[in-house]
Length: 375
Image (cartoon, rainbow, N blue to C red; front, side, top):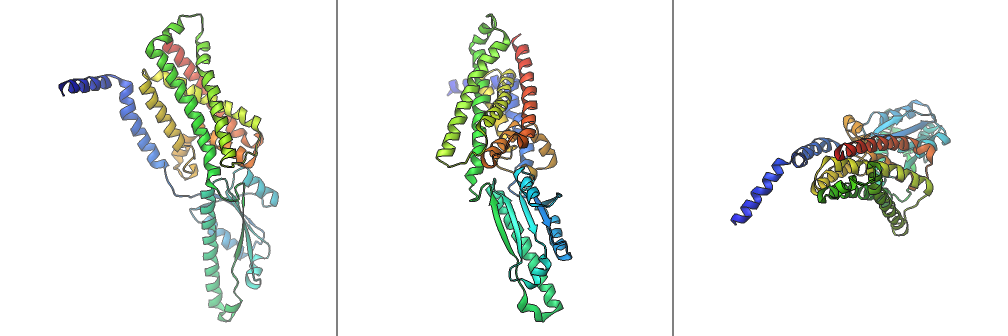
């Protein structure tokens, strides 16, 4: 028992002397607790909705007001036409589009079936289902209040009251299968793990066993050493991604509507960022254990702040600002847009520019720190 106690004391002393390990143990969890405590929420609010009112009567305007004065929806100001509605849903600028037809107020009094069209972006099946439920509830409350008001004015019209019949159609994921939404996110996470985690562990392992110093005295430059350490993991990441996509298509029946060459190019841009993070992590730590914990910190934070589980628009504004520095946020969006919508570069260029900026910045900083650490 005494030998075990001496061993415990020795391990504790080593931990307390290692400032990097102290940061991993105490500082990193506190950062996660403070940031993620605000970010993680299952409430679905601020759903972007486009409402096209072709009736323009007091009745239709009252209905529009009900959608704009609720925390569940954020009203999008946009021109109303069939082409604009499709454009906004395709670009992801609106989750739901509601069309109030001409003569809606008249049909509400005279027609057997006054109709309202509801179009949904079905990429996120959970959000779409909840949005549809919110929409139907607002329509039901509107109808109930309208009936009550009419009955107060003229009780004899009770027999002529007609209910609204919403006509719904879900685009991009008609069956609202959640697997269509989750698989692209899982592929993104697998690619991040392969490229970021293994790169950092490989470099730190070389330093631990002393072979990195041996490499530095060879004729190879630091840039060549970095390339030799990162290219294999970039290749492994693409292989892993190809296998995951194959399983997704053949087993889960996930459609891939977009361009595969475009997907490969955008994936290479994302890999540049994660490889840079792997190199950067290797310059912050001294052991593989520290590299593992630090990589896990980045990975968990990226996942929870990427919109993979929780919509970013539901997070506080200051947390949303933090997510702009998260490369996984952009890559998950790219995969979902390519898989389900077949989006092209004209739609995905904001995500591409963000990944290029992040990748260039992170890889440059990581390379400079690597040069300084090995100098």
